[in-house]
Length: 474
Image (tube, rainbow, N blue to C red; front, side):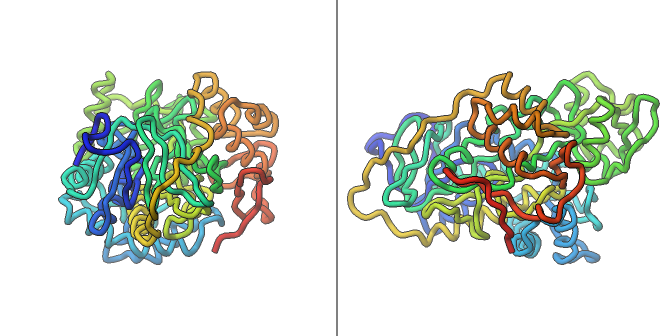
């Protein structure tokens, strides 16, 4: 059932559901489907459910599907990319369940192309759909099932203002239209990479769910780890998928010479490119027919990838940190769950392995939704609590420039200190985390602390009213 306008006739402004899902990316869509066999679900999306950040994902989904591969090998590569900070139990859950989640998608009608190779993977284990259109194909298949499901109500164009708290637990949320009461609330609101000047994300990816959770009393962690994709089209948010480099595309400097290992970890490649400004991605030697949508986009932008290398530069792509959860999506606030890019399970450590993000949405979106079914019911009259502060102030161009300058590919204490005074809560929290991590690890690089520190092989956790805490997650 779909409600893309005001609440339907006969419903009160304070609707009651078993599960409230906020966000319509792959984590939210899949979580809603997994819960709907047993519960009534409301899925709230601030935009159309077919325009989420998930639908823009060009990378594939990593899973040990090949005869020469195993979940243990996938786990080894994930742990290696995480630079000592990946949570072993979360990595095991991710990689063990990956093949089953690929089969789930196939049963829903997603047609996969085969196994590809991407940076950091020791095997061909990345499944793609439609070349570089994997996110769109997966999100579309899930959205169609969600819209057709009789126990899922969808509200598009409805924005989260804050979480509702009563007696120390989350009992729903306040949106710009109504008060929603729910036994459990699942935040699947995506990341915050659109806070940076150069980004591959849609404008709405500004961390709304993280901010709301923190204001309600939940913990955030790993905010300093922001993954910058090495190859975004210059003067554009168009991402040139790592799958291109996996198939043999090469990076060239201003002299037409290769200067790096194209399949090195993303942070390494991004800094190599960033040090040179703009470089060229040469697609002439690869089978471009495998990526029809992406080639069409390049042609629409005025480029001929069959004749001329494409100018690329790094852009903010993925925020590793988020709302602290256990392996079933539970936050530190009872009744509140989180999954996908807005969550911090610790699975990615300091640097997400390519094509583990859509997989994370599937594995932990499902886990969170199933765990949420066990929350107690709402008894009798539910109060209308104050959800705290309203929505975050608008993200200005000045803020986005400041984050790019002071918390970009390379950081230092002076720039991060300036960002501490930003008018935006999440920007200040990112700066707080980056200041506390006086080392360089994975996607966090400090020019004033260029080496890894054994003492900081822990997670930096932020809780309201408390100084940053260092924690080890098993």
